[in-house]
Image 1 (cartoon, rainbow, N blue to C red):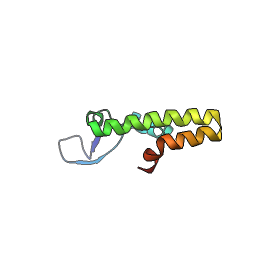
Image 2: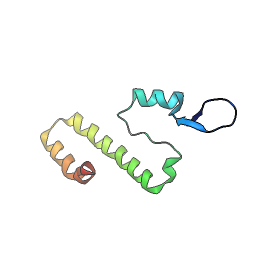
Image 3: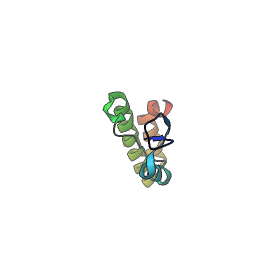
Image 4: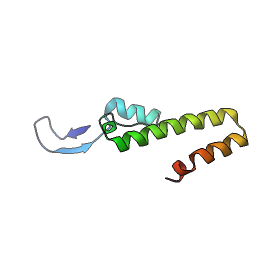
Length: 83
C-alpha cells in the first residue's frame, strides 16, 4: 500500500503493509504471507504455494519428533532448502 505526505494528489513517499497487514506480519511473521495481487504472477504463486506445503510438512515433522522423519523431510525438500 502506498502512502502520501498529504491528502492532495502528489507523489507517493513510501510503501507500507497497512494497519491490518502490518499487524498480521508482526504477529505471524514466520508464516508464508504474500500480497494477493502478486499471486497473479505464476512464478510468485508457485513459490508461495511451495512455502505453504513445506511449512505444513515441517509442522508434521515437529509433531513426530523422530530422526527418521527429519531425514525424510530433508531428502524430500533438500532442493527447496538450498534455494
